[in-house]
Image 1 (cartoon, rainbow, N blue to C red):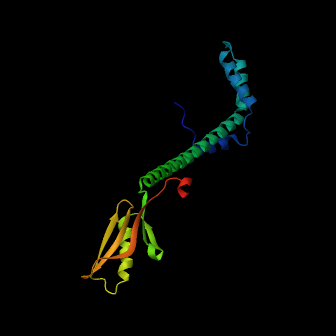
Image 2 (image 1 turned 135 degrees about the vertical axis):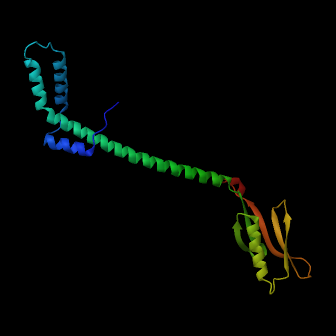
Image 3 (image 1 turned 30 degrees about the vertical axis):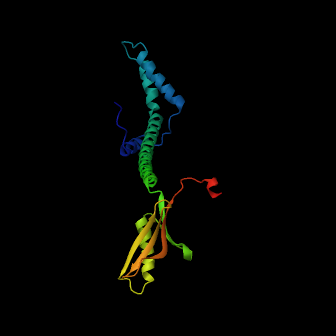
Length: 200
């Protein structure tokens, strides 16, 4: 199991202790590693081990730069950890947006492909386009109701032509005969792609 990374406070404490030491060069790190190896593998005499003492002294004098390089590496690891955290959050947000867009795309794909045009073709008036036939018919009925001085006795009905997908509004006022109004609602299929031949 790897050692827990140093905290910022610990790095600052060590930096204060080693002063203005510059980071060790790669060559110095390699020499230090060789010194550690040589100290471990040489034949230790039974008397005073001057060889080991010299190696330890040499390494001790150069530990400041080695520790500075270590601190710099620890600081860089901390930066990368913070960047990874930020990146993970950004990826999480992007994934959430993607899911929302996917749901919206699915919603649009499942939406009705038919719109209903309310109009009075004899007058050249298009009242509007609606997602439901009921809304388009309500608009036509409202326009027709305005044309009567009294609308309390009006009764509306729709004559539907299933083949042409057109519904025609007729009105009965009081005891009068049923009469056409000129308002119609046409069901129109929305094309999912452009068909050049359809314009011909």
